[in-house]
Length: 66
Image (cartoon, rainbow, N blue to C red):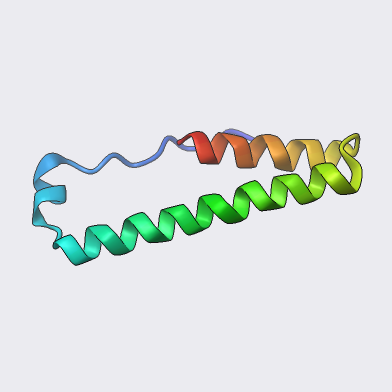
């Protein structure tokens, strides 16, 4: 399944955001990454040879890298 490239905000869009909005977004992204990493660890611990888990882990890793 092909994924779409992430949307890249422009400098002017980023400048328009408040500090509070940026802090909130940073925390939201950190929380999402934490849960993706934990999910990968859980799947590897449960059955690292499961093909569906391997695909999900790869998708999570690709998402984290973005």
